[in-house]
Amino acid sequence: MRMEELTWPDFEEAKKSIDTVLIPVGSVEAHGRHLPLGTDVFAPLELCRRVEERVRNAGKDVLIAPPIWYGHTFVLNVYPGTIDVRADAFKAYVREVISEFVEEGFKRVVLMNGHGGNVYPLIEAAEEVAESYPNAEIWLINWWIDFREDILSICSSQGHAGQDETSVMLAIRPELVKMDKAVGEKRTSRVRVIRKDIGRELFPDGVNDDPGSATRENGEAILGVISEKIARLLLGED
Ligand SMILES: [Zn+2]
Picture 1: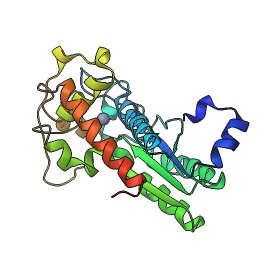
Picture 2 (picture 1 turned 180 degrees about the vertical axis):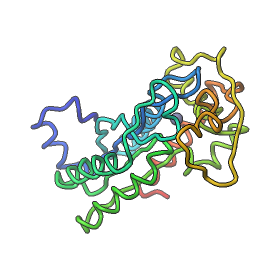
Picture 3 (picture 1 turned 45 degrees about the vertical axis):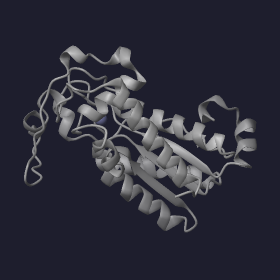
Picture 4 (picture 1 turned 90 degrees about the horizontal axis):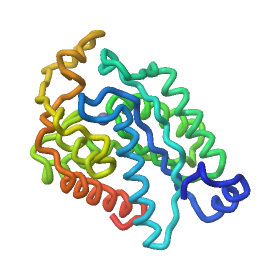
């Protein structure tokens, strides 16, 4: 069930039998010359859609809330099309959104995150809500981190706009992926260096991995295994 498609009386009715809301969270951000700027929302939104379908088949409903599109993305802000929201503003905004869903009566708020720069502000936002609402439970799912083992059993590498993310996008919106421009390499730094233009070194063209061997089949496999595992967690089967 997609919240933005409901009227308020529909929503009020739905709340009677639904205790979990999934909120896709992403960023509008450079993802190489081959992936669209909305990649970090497309992926978690698709995971939410598949999780909803899976739990519905098990006889349970969840609500999918409208995505939070703009995130915190300091490093990639050196590239055109990256729209960065400062961490404190992003944290405060997300905190208000989560709080509202808790006020609406949802027992569990699942932040389905698609973007690395959001992780710390999302944890802080969730902690602040949990301080204010002792009964609230917030889950933070970072799909490429939490399910890294599964991903690396399908792909030989992963990274920003890399093999895993590109495969996932080939499965979701293949018409938006320019595979002829999918090039890159893994670059790492021994310690975290924070400098305004560090993104040009660590993420040349907005990529940090080799996306060349991405395939639609691998993307399907990744989405399948992750959505299955999340659905099982929500159903209390794991
Ligand atoms: Zn991404």
